[in-house]
Image (cartoon, rainbow, N blue to C red; front, side, top):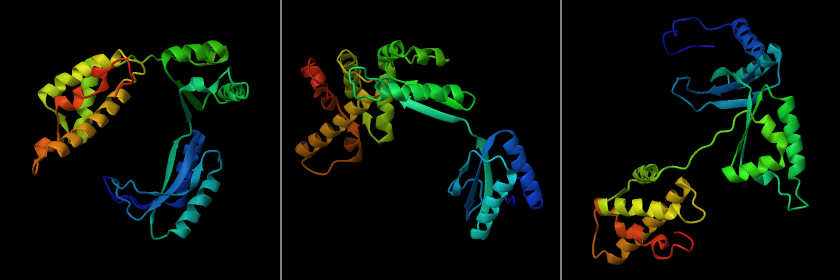
Length: 258
C-alpha cells in the first residue's frame, strides 16, 4: 500500500504484515471488508472498481489477504485499497401496509411479515428495519399486526409541509431546472397550493413537482403558439401566472388536479 497524497505521503509503503494487522483489527470489530482498485489513487477519485463482492461474513484475515493478493496479481499496474465498513444492514420498506392485505386470500403478506419478524429478532444487533407510509394506514397496519408495533422502537411522525415551505420547494425545483416565477406567478402558485391541499390525493412535494411539470408544458405551448419571432432566455425561463392558473384546480376543484 502506497500513500501518495497528504501529510502521510512521506511514509514508506505498508508491508503485507502491516496490512494484515489492520485487517485483523477490522474483523475484530465486526466490520465487513471490500477490495477495490483504480488507475488513479488521488483522494478525489471516486471511480474505484470493486474486486468481487464485499466480504460480510469472513472472519479470517488470511482469506481477506488472499483476495487482496489475487486483485494485486490481476491488476498489478493499478492502485489497490482495502475498505472496511460497519456491516449493519438497513431494510427500508416504503408503504409497508401493502405487505398485508387481508381482503386478498391469495396474498402471502402475512407469511412475509412472520419471516420478517423472525429476522428482526434473530439479527437485532446488525439489522435496521424502517417501515414508512401514511400515518393513518400505518396505524391500521400496526393494529392488524401487533407484533410489529412492539418491535419498532421509534415511531417518527413527519408533518406535512406548510404552504410557505411548499412554495419554497417549488422555487427550488424550478431553479434547478433554470426556471423561475415572475411575481404574479408566485402569487398564483401560493393560491394553487392552498387550493390543491384541500383536494383528494394531495401528496405534498410530489404534487408540487407534478404541478410544475405541467406548468412548464403549458409555458412551452404558450410560447410556441404566441411567439412571432425569436424569444430571449428570460422569456424562455419564466413561468407566468397564466401557466399556473390554467390548472383544473382553479376551474374544476371537484375533479382530478393538474
